View 1: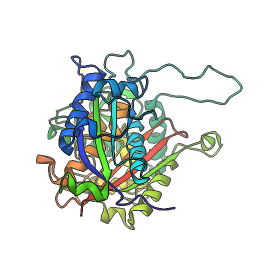
View 2: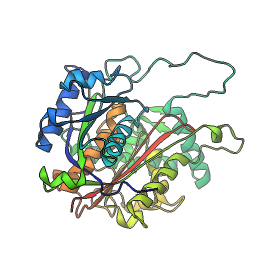
View 3: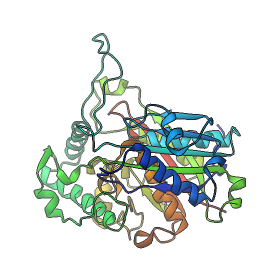
View 4: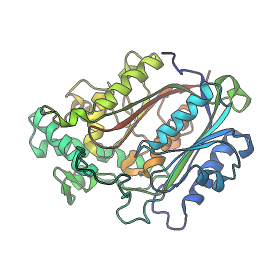
Length: 393
């Protein structure tokens, strides 16, 4: 299989403030994010030849992007893949450019969740059929299973496990205070995490990300065109997706201790990008910290830490902003926020700024390779995305 490596470049990106944006609707957020991306790229909206639009609850079709940003008569495809929609919109735009379908493409993700009861509650798209084995549960329930299993495998008491997770929450809260576009700006302590109200065992309030309003967008083009627009463009090194089919979840030996979709997507991404040792070669990573346990498990699934040893790196400060491999330097889902379909593109936005050296007080030193990891769905049925980026030549 031929790699997409270095065939596509990001020449512009935009991202709105994430948060409780009561004065803005989806159209406003689309315009804000896309306007920043187009201006950053030094182009006009009329230069966009094809677009992909991601939204779970805030977009009926690609026409929402077309009408908001005034993109008449170009092909626009709506992508919906739960929390990973933004990554998938970006990936599809990359595939089109790499295949020669278009030279310049736009990917945009938006969500307006704070106006909705239950945040991202949505109607079941299919009528209930008792002949099918379908098991759904809220995200907190799913990842609580992961946490309990992980604690058991480590031989930890709940208190021991929660203290490790607290360090991750404190890290991401600190990083969020350095980002003016982040939803939350509050330093917390480990004691704050441990004494917070319980959400679901073993998670307290600070172990869980909330939901936000927001949008993000990217303008991409053929890599050989990128220098026409800017010198500090960012190259796409790998785009990798994996979707679970559910069989594992219904096996007697499935224990919630592994999310194979991410492991498989990461392996394919590293092969595409030519990365042999991700811990040594990746400069920074933006990963899907919907719950603190997921970030901890992802350190291992992405090859940053040995299996069952990530806690040692947490204790050593490996993933802090000034550590050997900074993770979620923009605050992650926990503090930047989580408007579902905008999240994957928000992650790419941070990596883009970091590789350009434009991340301000949270700038990672000597950033040359960045990774984003994003998942949507439910345990056993995840849509996983792992993307890798590098500085332009």
